[in-house]
Length: 458
Ligand SMILES: *Cc1c(COP(=O)(O)O)cnc(C)c1O
Image 1: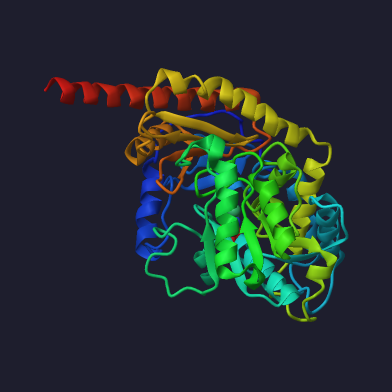
Image 2: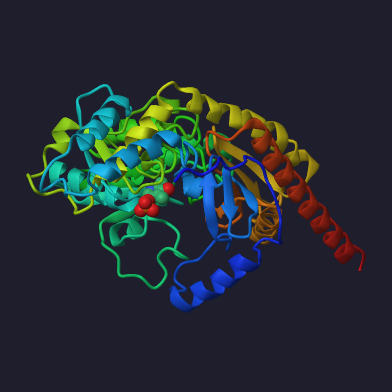
């Protein structure tokens, strides 16, 4: 069956959500646990490039990419071709039972392309959380130490160990404890909200890391796990020098530096990996999300002496590196091959900053426009007091959704709108989405100002 191409344009035929989505959502509520939330309750019929088509025939501009997964575009033809071919041959053997070469090919690409000029080995898994857990397992096995250093506002997943490593209680951890011990948290050099000013963030945060290590005994730490750009925590780019500082501290104390590139990696930020911007390499680099182009695949890639320190049989998983997921990754690698998509990510940043930066002056609610490449965010807060405005963020997201633009909220204070368009997004679609977003922000800012005037004059 070959479908006609999906038009890369926004189209609203009904209210969002439309009647068919509303009916399907009502049925969902009868069948599905309420434990799953949903950002926008529309039911998708098709997705291609940067457009989601719902069951009511509406075409939505996608600034989410399924949380940075379909970076090479929804239904990327190269991904489809590889997966289709694999689907005809076989779907599963379990790599621990019998082997297939696509697993090796994915590992080879990651060994060659992840930062670090040293010999590497790779292990494949299915989810980001699973990969992070395995990075900790490898670090513990290789060092004989137990502790893990993580950071404020970090997000590493929803499994028990990764919940412990994740910072935010609600919704990720609430009522789900007790958690594994030996997880210690340190400040992250967040420029906007650093108490003594952005210019002090790097030095202060690194000093805090050193003090926390000294307090707990640096020789008790197996790993230091850090997102080179924080994802769920608010798309926070650490102040310059923080990551290289962590690299030095980890090396000095024999701690394995694990870079969680699950959200930021695979071209998203305008470099193949976000850590490339500060020219550092983790001892282990963790990838997932965009790696499988929409199929569940994750990986840890690290120094051979770490990765091979684990006893044979110590790592694995029934679906780890599933053949369909590996085939999808080979399609992703092909799509990234000529560098044009990574370049697009940088082009997306330029367009987005052109349209969104002026809002810092034009409104009193845009406290920050930040990010790299196609991993961008707008933080809403009182621009003087930095009081977070989750209420306005929610309003702006709702207006975008109602107008056919899918955006996601993140941040410890739920006051950050994040933009994660697929890297294949066409210029006119991107600009339409950005203009719409700008207008919605302006509208909400104006009505917030009007409301404030009313309380002042009342
Ligand atoms: C999404 C994410 C994870 C967890 O990945 P899952 O596939 O959802 O388990 C871990 N780290 C970061 C930075 C993420 O964005």
